[in-house]
Image (cartoon, rainbow, N blue to C red; front, top):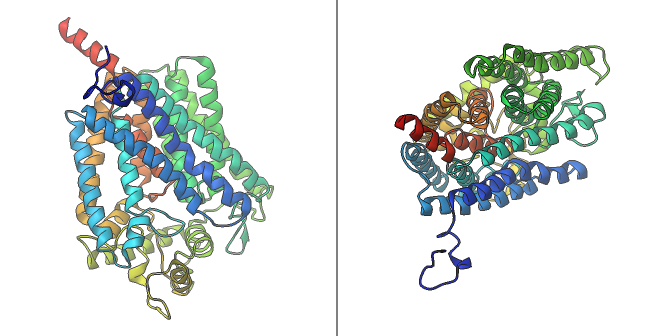
Length: 482
């Protein structure tokens, strides 16, 4: 008999009667929206050739609200127990510190809450990431985990198929020309080639591990073909992140085969990463793809010139008198070094979410610090400034403070430990795949930065990697009884 509260109807008491299985089904749908909605909404500005990326933020908001409701239900139903409370509590501390940081922002509270136009990573976005994590960590069924794995692979397929047009024709993207070079760089529906490389790192890891661990042959074939596609497209991001993503895919395949005692023949999956990557490089060197005839990395031109400066006016143009923009090591070293200086200036609360550029500005002509249109005009005149440092850990410390970095580090360490327990138990291949995806995301954060396409997927995977399944609990009890 269904439970009722104060003689109300069964329908109005659905939370009271919600089972773990039903919640997990609802949560899997919510997490699928987290995977796809931002990419789907980004299709509009790509088609229109107008940087109206507030639509992408709207996609994040819709999926975020859905999962926020699910997270509240999870708290009400007390689905988060044991050591998982440590991860959720640490994330809550991070969120509180981020809120204080946004309210004491270097520029203004609106930017801290909503984020800079086109980036959209203010406090609200961080709250949505928290909701994805809580929703994911509250899941109880293997089917829900499998759904998320396929969602991550599906997001990679969507972005990669869109990228094919960008690579071979260049109409459906903003990176056909990158600071004077006809590069035809792939950004997919991720807004930047570097963000696409981060997304495809997760999708490639999921596909490779799936190809090794899945039992059905048809599913392994889909994963294998998908991995080939992801590896091929990733090279056309012309980025260090892309190269790191390829390496992570290979390492993930090797670790999965030996750690899960899979047939050694499935080590051949490393060639689904290696061969397409080589083919992409050969096409570039043959002059088939763009006007360049030698494969090279263009991180500096993409992140500084094409993305921040030209696409969003979120930073000034790079200063060629002080940096060799084609020297990838020098670009990242400069960004990291200057960010460390900014951290030393505001170590406790940082600049405020999405406001790294503001302390660097030296030209404030006719700007009152409140209007976004004026902000873009002023920021773009400040040569040598930047709004993103491509190391998420430095970026967190710089924008929300060192204490918030320690809080988020506590979340990640707890996730790795809890996920390792489920990985060793080997109850579900989906658990193992999501654990490898989470590890890939933690590593790629050393050369990448949070963004509204990548982060929802990462935090959903991170939460799911810690999940202890209902059937897993039964198996563990049976083992103890025996």
